[in-house]
Length: 297
View 1 (cartoon, helix red, strand yellow):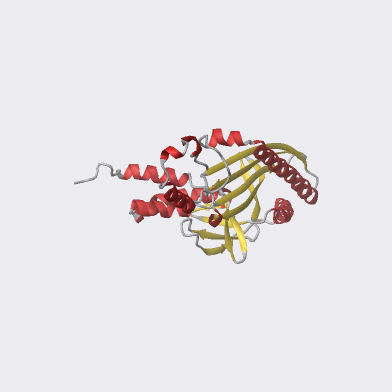
View 2: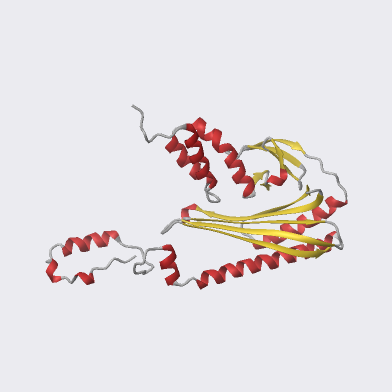
């Protein structure tokens, strides 16, 4: 007799993909393994999870370690067929999103023209900035044609994954601007995701969009001015986040995130509590006013 609670294949696929899409940064493979154990169908899991994992990796600018160098996997260096290229070192590679294995390396030729000179100058200045400001960060500058415009696309990724400390965090930014005209429009998006799961399950996602202008003079000056711009915007974003956290009062946390119980910011010692309960069992309930028995969290 079949179990009425069993899901059909279509429903399983929908639930699996929905949960995988919600996986916080740095936790995709943990979610995948948990679902694999529950579903008990490895073929289905790998078949349906492959494209979700590819979306997760490209959307989060996942770094891939290749011969001592990190290469970001994004939609901007996707050549199709799970092949990506590194514009800095001029090679492409095959990448298995589920296993994280990269192989089948090939030379990827890039025309050494004026635009590449500008891209290289931008990439060098940007890397120096990221290395000095992010404990674990990577970046890359791409030359792309978007909406019939030749533009530079800048991708920045910085993460701290501490699953043993019960938290993970990802900072990623994307900037786009054209080499022409002399005064160019810069558009950017800064995104921050954090997940804390020790004493609570809190998932925060914040996004900020930026629109500014830059004067195009020469490659060296553009690189300096662009780095100054993103450093200023990163600092504004970080300060705003800190001020927001500081503005959250205890009352706000109680009303929004928890039941309204006394908050002591301590962890309950259950062993001590059980010992006390065994002692109290010898005391008549009439001797202890009910109002003195309080639950603290």
